[in-house]
Amino acid sequence: MTDPIIGTPQIKLLERLCNAVAVSGDEGEVRAIVLDEIRAHVEDARVDALGNVLATRSGSGKNRLRVMLAAHMDEVGFMLVNADGDGLFQFETVGSVDVRQLPGKRVWVGKRHLPGVIGARPIHLTTTEEREHKIPLESLRIDLGPKAGLAEPGERATFAASFHRLGPSLLAKALDNRLGVAMLIELIKHAPPNVDLLAAFTVQEEIGLRGAGVAAYALKPDLAFVLDCTPANDLPMYDRSENHLYNTRLDAGPAIYTADSGMVHDNRLVRFLAETAQAAKIPFQYRQPGGGKTDAGAIQRSLAGIPAVSVSVPGRYTHTACSLCRLEDWKNTLRLLYTALEHVTPALLNLEHVTPALLKQ
Image 1 (cartoon, rainbow, N blue to C red):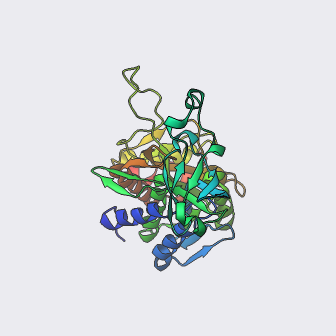
Image 2 (cartoon, rainbow, N blue to C red; image 1 turned 90 degrees about the vertical axis):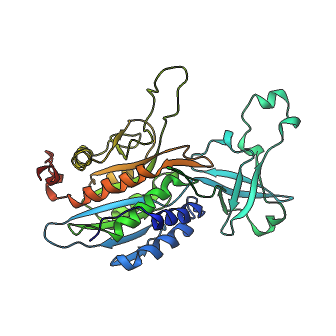
């Protein structure tokens, strides 16, 4: 069994995933890519009633833990709600989107990726009072022009931001969480034999962690790792010499969650990941406690309780038209997860944390 790597094929896969339109509740484009990539590597791959992709790859040997790995397929975006005529559509946001950033943004609409733009009156035609206040969502429209007849209310739309590699950085919409989806695909293809790997590519994370809880009930894992992308808040703070407000930073490696607004992450797993990273000389950081939630919150509260922790790639500008992350942070996140899986044993779930076998070598 070879270790997973991130090279040209994996970057090309991430590009396909990022350029797909898969707004919450309509994740079909990403689901099709996932199924095509994993079918040859798992014993079963099924789609549940909500649209989650659930797959199992069993290991070998005795006393194997059932380890759930989850990555959400959906992204934030928009839903068309009414046709105004003349190619214009009223719309609502799906997930957490800052309305202030929307005027003038290009979008792709529906399965045809119809090109459109979010329109607002130009500054020349607004009053001073209007310019001093945020444009309300109800005043914005998605303008599809002559293609409007190919769209209808209920269809999703997302930012039209194609994937690009720029030196050490990756730029795209929906790096949250196509980074996690791509990593989970690689971990399935290179699953270590000491665990039963239970993969969940989840839906509707951005609107309430809805798919993850259902997936956990179906898979019944012993523990869970959630793969995601978390906001970096590491831009310069010009009123002070150092930014003390960051939650994660680029170029500092995978971010291990300790607590967020949805849960306190399992301390045994947090310590295990940190010790594993230290022993393997993988750079890592702790994601500073604060707002935001991941699928781990829904998984933790499923069944009789499931030990869970999130591991994320830091990224700037999440939930906007274009996010940015570092290729090395993505690589190191995959390395940490694979190394951790190799050293998972039942002793990890003891209430008193046991130092992982990796540290005893």
